[in-house]
Figure 1 (spheres, helix red, strand yellow):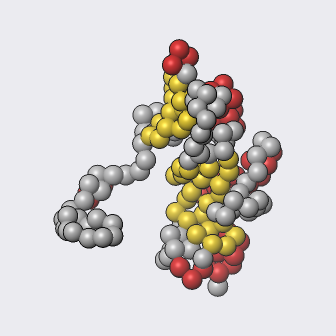
Figure 2 (cartoon, one colour; figure 1 turned 90 degrees about the horizontal axis):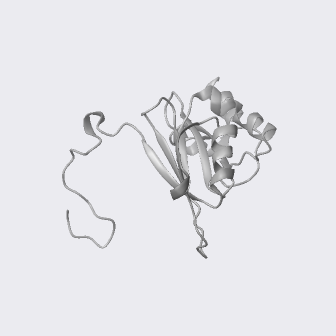
Figure 3 (cartoon, one colour; figure 1 turned 135 degrees about the horizontal axis):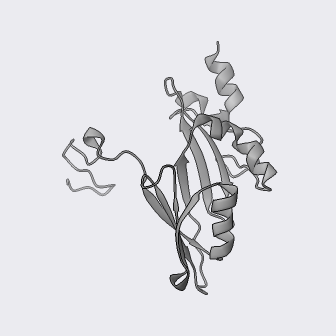
Length: 171
């Protein structure tokens, strides 16, 4: 590591992600206010499979995708005065992202833009490019459904509705 007043820089170009060492997020953990409410949300609204619940510790684990390929842990908070909300993204099939707004609304959940504004259509982040939809869980954590799109990144596109991306690439 070289000395710097900014972010650290490591000299080696060989990284832990080289040769597919890091392929995606395996697990993440979230603090929740009410474990039962959160279990119902992640199981009944998102359709995740409950892998384990440990009531005496107020913890639950869900499989994300195929069993043993991804996991979400939920930990019920006590009476702490501060409550932190977090963000995470699920790598999701394109069709799931494209149908998410309607399905979320049917479940009584507001789909959101990257700027936390209500939307009725997924957005595309041009620099990736990826089609995305955001929404909140019962504890206010921001969940993102994301699917990387084919084609070249377009930073100038910014963030716009999916229909604008399709119209742009169709020409």
